[in-house]
Image 1 (cartoon, rainbow, N blue to C red):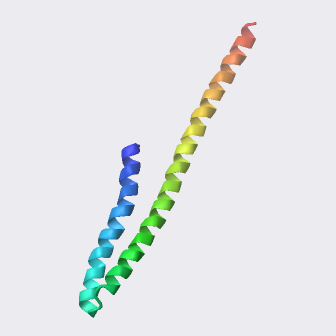
Image 2 (image 1 turned 120 degrees about the vertical axis):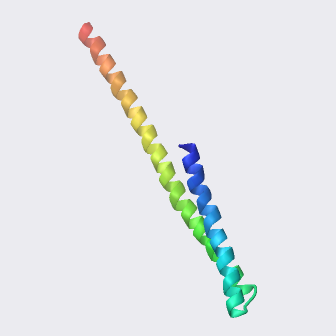
Image 3 (image 1 turned 180 degrees about the vertical axis):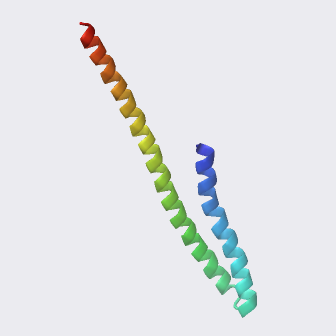
Length: 90
C-alpha cells in the first residue's frame, strides 16, 4: 500500500514538470520567445502538480481513515459479542 501511494504521488510531481519542460522549450523555439513560454509552462505545471498532489493525498488520507474506522468498528463488535457471551454464561 505504501509503495502504491508513493508511486501515485511521485508521478504527480514528475510528469507535469517533464511535460512542462518539453512543451515550454518547444513553444519557445516555435515562437522565438525564449525563455518566457518555458517559464510559463513550468509555472503552470507546478500548479498542476500541487493540485494533483492535494487531491490524491486527500483521497489517500480518506482511505486510510476509513480502513482505521472499519478496523476499530470490527474490534468493537467482536468485543461486544464476547461480552454478551460472558453474560449469557452467567
